[in-house]
Image (cartoon, rainbow, N blue to C red):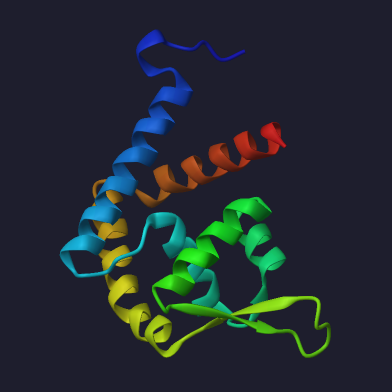
Length: 144
């Protein structure tokens, strides 16, 4: 069994890292005139990979529940970055579709994210990063 050190309780450490990354994203987006949150960015990133997907697909890809996803999509619609369109195969479902503004945001946002990732992973070896990936995946599996 792994001993937990009081000053590095896992949940506190991961929370601090997550908060620091979110703050960095928000600050960088704001400085570049991009008015989205990190949660909204995660939805946009999914749509940039594959546009016109169902809300349920976005929930699965981002690990968000339906009410949270509805709120995220509503806010992205207000910013004219996405729109809902009826699924031609099943009129009961809506597909989430990028608008022209949503497409235009991709390169700028992706450059920001890439710069942050480069800065975040500075002085971390590929081996260290691989160990981190393995450990975090095991933790996610343990929590499911």
